[in-house]
Each structure stands twice: as C-alpha cells, then as structure tokens.
Image (tube, rainbow, N blue to C red; front, side, top):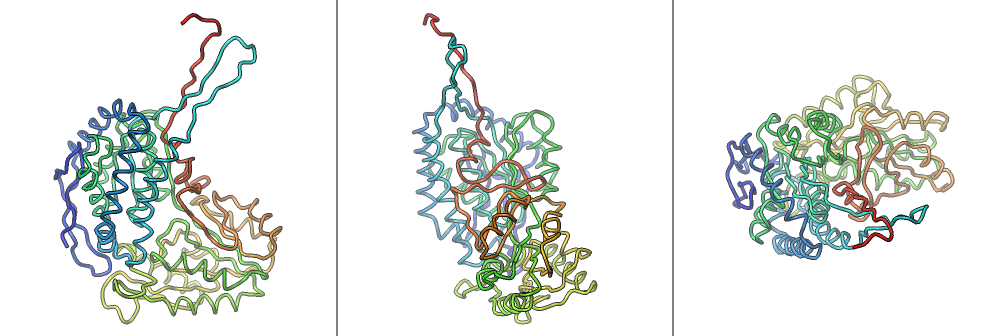
Length: 480
C-alpha cells in the first residue's frame, strides 16, 4: 500500500524542508518517509492561518457546517484507507483502529450540530438603563499538538471543535504516527477546504515544533500528551497571552472493595489495560484491592492476561498490540524489573511473548504486592502492566489514591454499595470518576485536575476552549 507522505499546508499538499521515517512497531520495518516542516514551513503555516482567520471565522455557521459535513462524508468514504494508515504506523490491531475512525467521523458530525446549539445570551441590567448581550466569537488561530496513542481520535478531538468555532487550526501529529493525519490532509485537499482553515504538518525536531507555540500568532494552544510536554508548551507559549486546552497524563487508581463484582472489575480494568497495549491516558495504573478479595481478583486478572492474544495479524482476534517503539519497550522491561527486584510478585507476563521474535511486544503483565517504593507505582505506566496493591481498610486509601504527582485524570471505583462509591468519588481528586464500569463518548466531557490538564476534550465544553466572549452594551433610549 502507498501511504500519504505530504503535509497539508496553505491549502495544498506539499513536501517540507525535512523528512521523517515512520516504522511499524509490530514488525520493526519501514513504513514510509514523510515530509516534515522546517522553520520556514512553520512560519508560513502560521501566517497562512493568521490570514485565513477573518474569512473562516466570518463564515456563517451554516457554511462551516457544510464544510465539516463534506469532510465527514469523505472520511466515511475512505474508512479502509484511514484505518490501514493507523494499523501500519502504530501496529494497532485492526479491530482497535475502529475507535479512531469512529471518533473522527463522530466529532465532525457532532460539532457541526453542537455549534448551532450555542446561543449568545443577554444580561439583566440592575438599573434598567442599558441592555447587554454576551456574544461568542472564535478565539483565533489554534495549534494542536497530538499524541501517538490514538492518532485519529486525538486529531478528532481537536479538529471538530476548532473548525466549528471558526478557528483556523494547525495540527502537529506525533513523529511516530503522522501518516493517518496526512491522510486527513489529503481529504481536506480533495474537498477543496478553504485555504488555511486546517493545516497538518509534522516537525522533525522539537526546536521546530517549539516555533509553533512560541509564536505570537496562535490564540489557542491545545495538546494531548504528557504533563512534562504540557509544561514545556506553556513555557514556550508565554511569548503572548494564549488560551490553553490540555489533556495530560495521570497515574489512575482503581479501588476494588470486598463487595465488588470481581468479574466486572477485572473485565473493565484488563480491557482498558491490555487494549492498545495499555497506551491510554485513562488506563488504571495502581489497582488497590481489598485483601478479602485479593486472591480471587489476582487470579482472575492473571488468567485474563495469560489468555490475551498478542500480535498484529489483521485476521486474528488480537487483544494486545505492540508498544510504540524501542524506547517504550525498554521502559516496560525496566519497570517490571524494578518491581521484581523490590519484591513484587510476577503473576503473568513480564517479557516479550515467546511466539513473537520481532516487534515491540510486551505480554500483558500482572504484578502483585506492589509497594510505594516501586517505579511502577509512582510513574504513569503507559503499557500493558497491571499493578495490584493490597489494602485492609479505607483509612488512608483516599490519601494513597490521591497521592499522584502527575495529576488527576481518571479514577475507578468498584463496589455494590452506591453510598460508599459516591463517598469515595467525592473524595477522589480526579477529573473523571468511573464507578463499576467505564464510558467515553464524544458528548461526554473529558478532562483532568491539576497536572493532568486544563480545559476539556469532547462535549460542548470543548467548544469553549476555542471561543471568547464579548459583551455588547447599549444605552436604552439611544437613537439608532
């Protein structure tokens, strides 16, 4: 298959001043060499977006909706192509690519509808001497930095609200997964999207990427990535006053109480932890299990890990694909080794599956007796490793669960006692609390506390990250 290799910039497909090699982490083979932006390309993209802002933001909402729906229809017509790009650039299982594709399709349709529901509103005047209106307007140029773990889902979460709000958006995909984003650029070009409304450019170096955030042109910087990357972008973006919308990392706890439905708990936690090789921001990292059900939970989790199908075969029912690259593979091995050396029990996995002689695959791993001095307890794992921590009562459970230097994105609670669940949900300092299951969708807000980010992806709340409010006040009785 021939994969897309050109950036989409200034309304056309173009090569850049640099190139990037993309490898398939499942096979460790070369997929494509793609164009990457240099300093001049970045400046040209920024200026193009700046120049496009008056026209794009000034279009009637109905016109922007038509462009979004045309792009959505083109996405739908190219489902196989888009999913193949992800399948090869990330080594993601074929079934798992469906979520990425669905997210892009749904985001374009959802925000095309949602922007029409956003109404300006009036304010009462206490003295009765004036009338006031609050009016929503596009904030300005947006720059979106994407993570590699869900190449099209992450793009979807940014392109939908930015287009709907009227913000020209420059999308910078991860160096590991630029191909599917470039495929979207091809589709934008194919439908003749107005010049500068969307631009998609990879960058070969962090210094070049920094030029996007350091510029005074963007009004919005948005990111899906690590807390460290978010902090870096905010530092480089301090050249001017900007809006920030960032979904960052976390060290998600899961609390499993003795009355929990263990099958539900194991299915939920292992499903999130082993799908996408655990490379999910909301993936549970520290699983606190009451000692009364510790053995049963551990046995069920280990059995689930051992039965998982690891690989990349498109025609097989794959549970777990590879981690993204050699660095991530080495990090998984180091986390497991550190835990083992400090006394953790290896209940399942721990290494590359014996039947696979290449690819960055880590067998789904379950660690028991994990303690606070282990790296796997303190760090966001971002891999297919479940860490089980026993507890006897909940005296200090909340304090331990909230003890997370990387901030609070998601926490999980499993119990049949709804009063207990709600009490702990209220005490957990996380942006999302999932009780006895898990649910995400384009209409549900997604965001964290503290070091896990600012703003929201998904839901109507995401639109507000790309909008500003203007107050228009008129004196009553004034002549027109």
